[in-house]
Length: 493
Image (cartoon, rainbow, N blue to C red; front, side, top):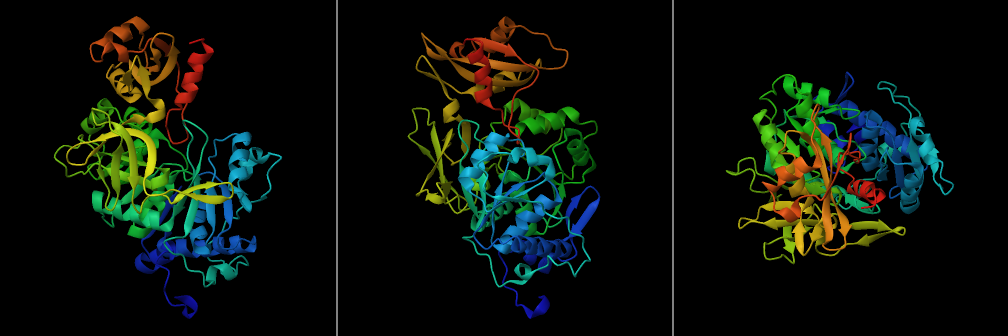
């Protein structure tokens, strides 16, 4: 290495990639292409900037930036400098940002001017700074400081980030993610999906989301190219997959549906894997995607597991049977009922050591209880049913919203659906559904109920209906069921 420094940075994946893959292209965005070598030099500059701001290993730095080159640089520079990143969802409102930052208590907030209005909270203690745009070739840049050439060496136990869960059912919690977790997640993914150094990831998940960061880190470990999209655009993604520009992409079901709707040309056979996760995937959507020629691979994971935890084996004879745990991952069903359905719990080196709370790490012991309901078949394949908090218990019978939504989506008049519980004096709870109709479709509640009764038991058929132009969702495409429940509550149901 330059300056006579011996190589010892196997956990500094940008530096390691520069040594191993040097002039291969790594990151591409808006016509800019950076090789692994160029990328590591940029990371030196950003690490120098972090040092100039007084940050030392272990300090927390919140990040409020759009997905782009600067946000990607910080993911790797924080590893090099030993800084803990706290990515902030750019869609949060000021009060939500204030609550998150109050819990994380970062030393600085690195923010874009466009998001300055989110930082108006009176309780904000951290300094707010802007990350300069670095230009390659300026070797005399004063920010290329001591931190870039320091003796600090990352290790597997280093906390890489503190990522707050989306909070679809409650208050967000800060999951602690380590370099070791990301490493085992990458290894597990390579072993399950195969690894080809010629692969190109199409990265259209936000970089404040664990899925976006995991793809960046996985690509650096494996020497793969990444096409970074500043935001999800269904048309651009469909074109890219049709042209065969990318061989790998990760989508949530909502994204997949929009890509299929936007597709004009057939998808290229060069596309090797389309991961689909983040929420239950309706069988009808899987069938539609496969008929269109996409190699869909359902996966299960969460923020706390660094993204993937169980993924369908593409070589399995029955790809719809369920997802198998990744290498070294352990999955179990806690307190299963007569049908084998219970709470999914997980453990393994991919799992977070715990949550950040009250200024310290609250460690989880042994199993992590996910709050998701599922069942395992006799071969250990996982089928995810729903969130425990979303389960509807009607007259003692369990109703899984995802099952009802999947049945609704079999109707070509329904484009999207969300099923939630509403109180009922006789049955305790009954299902209610908000639906988005397909373009030009006209349908009433009685027709929908009658159609569903041919596919579902009567107690699973929604008692209340609402036709809406769109469903509320998180930045990564998950439906905010609590907001949908609010609609029915406001209507007196």
